[in-house]
Image (cartoon, rainbow, N blue to C red; front, side, top):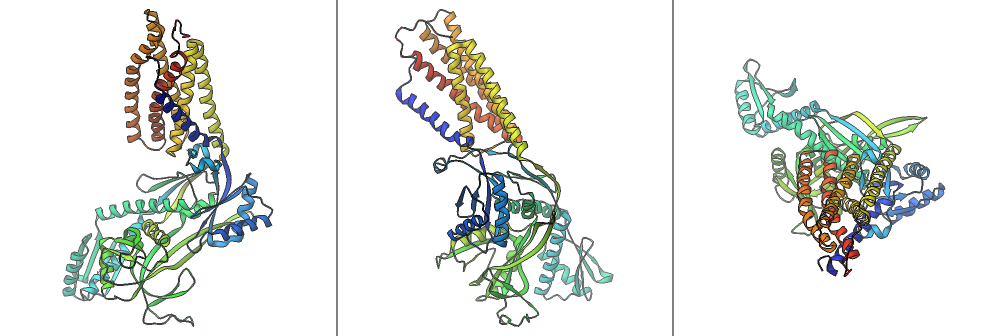
Length: 615
């Protein structure tokens, strides 16, 4: 009875193995070449869009494999890349500027597997192909923009304090404020010192000049914020491409690495990454009517909302998007309508509070400004053109004095509120960036890497199987079955975690296969040792597993500790390797101890007179 598992334990192990087979199977189906349509803010995806796309492709003689409509994108799958490329040309020409159209590779997982959330592993750049960009942030531009904001703040605080000044100019890392006389110079210095604590102040009494300069800690903070904010914005932009598991991380002081696995349209990726955007809060000009003759009042500007309706706004900007610290969507507690809750930094909060205090009952608008670049092929040459998009995305009435935290209402739906909150959180590219390095990894190279990785694992597995079966006979077969299930379990867990598999990860799988068989070798040798000591076969099986377990546990725990340390302290491919190693250790213990023991029990545990073992 010592070599029998209870029925529930056998069923539990079989259930785990069945789930592992199901959740690892999506990796066998490959990927479909596809075209992805993501709507811009001005349009919505609906069934009519599907009908339009079907008609366009039918007219062009392109037959899609399937068309899938989700909330945020339309995915058109094809059987080959020829149809994919032809469809991209057709849709780009016909759908205009209302959609982001990008080439992609979509998992060909059957619908019934997707219904139970069984998805394949993500493949890294070295296995799937894609593009690698190294972007350099223009730190000088970030500091310059910060100095310009301080210059505007100085004008504002001097006006509010009614201190007269002649000019405020930014020259050679200084903001110079010229006053009429020594008296106003002293008053101005006191006001600026009190209101803007991040500035270092100096005076030139002979010229009645106040010189303000950003402190070194402030400059370092601006530079740090510029890179962090740009990374956040890039992450949101990459989502437009539908890239799974992109790598966007800081490198050094002023550079950002962007890796987009599976992206085939490099030009489109560069357009989206290089686009810049910002937000502005402005008061609606309620004193003048919207001009119909093109004559806009001197202190106002004419904008248009997403529906093409004209909106007359004041030229003075209250707050820009880079002063938004956080934004979230929700419901207005009084009306129950959709709302966006916004947090501003201290400078933005003061500006907003002062402005809204004097304008309760008036309307305020949020203006979205984006500079886009588009690349088109003309006569065999790729030509990039730039265009600026300015539109009013929201107009709401000021009901009370705003503070650091306030809400925007008047939105059409909760979905629009979520989009606006996302936009505000993403903010703008604080500083422009240049692509200093660009590398493209072709799909064929990634395919070669996958094949080589699979071949190395398969050949290693077969070599181990041949040795184990020759050396341990039937127990070698048990060990190989357990080893195979270990690989299936490992792939299933990685798939369920939606981990990214890279070449180092495949090396981790190969290492795990080698380490997993060690546990079975220990068990088999223990059983042989017990048989040599004259113990009966049934007792040898029990003692072999029982005594080998402590050794297996010790060796795997020490390796697991090293793997966890590698995962916590490493980055990029090292973390991927460590993750596969740690998961592989856990699955190998399960397969080596429980799965192989179950097989041994089912084979020998029911025999009443066991006289010999094939080991």
